[in-house]
Length: 186
Image (cartoon, rainbow, N blue to C red; front, side, top):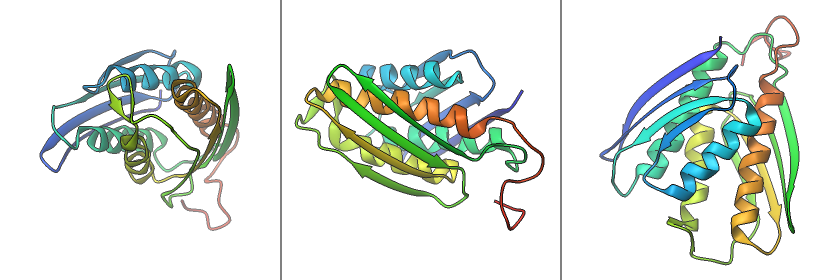
């Protein structure tokens, strides 16, 4: 099984994560936000990932959690040998649609296109979603393109996390030998 673990402290907030790429879609997440826990559970279900993650209370807990989940994903991929490398998915949820594409390139970068009208979704400030995904990209060393539209903010974000799960599963699929790069290293 391809598993990765990470622990970190980010600006005084401690976080830890354990991720199994070859899981069953099980999540045990305590981010301090019920809404973010719900989103990460949606991601693990669609990605067939098993994820255990925790973040201590604190202003930067969301970024700390994004970072350690990304690091655990990076470690589960090891040298990325034999993986497909690229993944993409479009997920509708009622009136909302999210398109996610990623590359396990070793070069962290986030493109985040979409508008959220609310200041909060449940107990999560929507302005924390981008920093969460940026920290995730840095930790996982991946390029991530996210585009979403719709009317309901909850649906837009949930379809994004579900699409992310599908894209991770697709890109992490074992289908060959060696590192999928013309340079031979990622």
